[in-house]
Length: 264
Length: 361
Image (cartoon, rainbow over all chains, first blue to last red; front, top):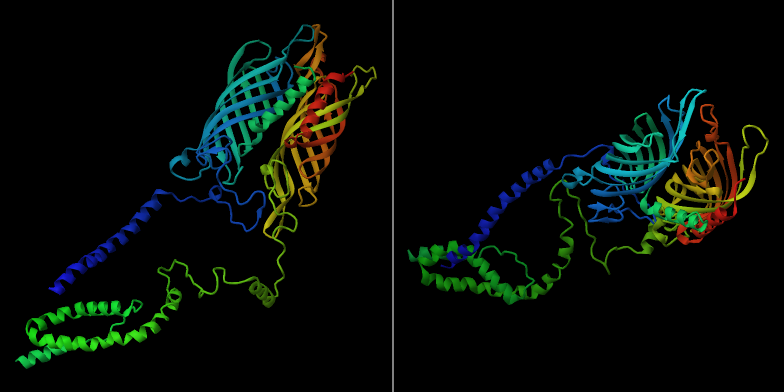
């Protein structure tokens, strides 16, 4: 009787130990399945920041959480390497050349300032991987630039016209390639879209095309090279762009100086 | 028959080899599990023996249990002795533990000494250094900096790596312009003011390591901004800025060098051809360049000396009224980070006074 009772007590323990063995074997195929779901990332773009024993006192080992972001990079006000979605807000100054058609007048220097806004997303980072170099988005910008000069006719009968300024409105799609995982990483942006602007001295606003290649550091700023291609009126500009957080104080100081000088 | 059965019962009921059990529990508690664990071990063997001669097994089991009672009693004096060795056993047990899988790292635990980890003192480290002839390590902080910079590296500092800043420059400018190309020989020169606002991106290109800390020695990066002077003259500039630190302190002397392409954006001009009054207009200007050298203290400010040259636009195919003559300026002033207020106020004041009081010839 006592033995029967004791056997009844200990048999569940024996059964549990026997059941535990299959679960251990189930873990192995589960791990393999997880490994298959996460594709192997390799190559220079995916290299993590190397470990270092030394660091800057004021900038210790960087936490990859972007600054001015919500949800640890789910949405960023200043885009950075680990942002899944970002807001773009910048001001820029550029200078270049305005090249009308050969019979419209000479090539003349052209300068413009631009305010740009938009957003970008990193689609692969939403589900599949913690980091991916590709980003895509939509941008829109407004520019004011120097005017145009047209010289038509010949030396005896020459018609010269000029305008004071040129206003441009653009909208386009931006394609990004992030070049490293570091904070404030460098990235290349290619934008293509349309531009609506005054065409030479016609006084008419027409749609043309717009393309831009830019190299930026995080979301803080960068240099760009863009072109607006309209009917018989081409402008090519190179410039520097800064985030609104940095450009805002500059604009405020400039306006304050103009106001103090009586220009406003 | 009964004798045989009793012999069988006796052999079955004879106590087996003593099984070692943990004896940390008090002897009465340890006697009970010793009895209970022994019973099921002998249970299946005892069952057939007990069932047949229960009467003979009774005194035999009593006899069998009899010598067991002194056995638990014997361990009583042994228990306190045995209780001591188990204490180091938990500490020693991890030592012979082999890695569960080849991939795991072996872990070794040093026998517990006084206090907690780490189990070495400064004296032990000094002895180790002396044994292996290792010099004393340099101060981890480089000897002079122990606290991080304020303002989260928005003001440049040697303890910062990457840093972004907005600078304002207020300067006296001596401007000049090439005279009328038709050749009346006048080359106007005049004293003016200059206000410049730039956004710098400083990337560390030369880094010094002391102990476990890195200090920036030189930064280099792109910069862009706007320049204002008299008569509504407005330029944009795009270029590079370099800063070299002569020390590691917050107020270490610095040498700054910037150079940029500058391009006219606008000017206050009158239109003689159409009789329009002077007003600020966006005006074309060929690309020129500006460069300056600064001597500063920390990332707060610097005395700058520099110059600017504006290229002419005088091609034959450009109508004469749209041509731009060559011009330039030398300037000396003060440039600083806007965060501490002084440079921004000085630049705004310079801009305003220049607009109100200076008129280009």
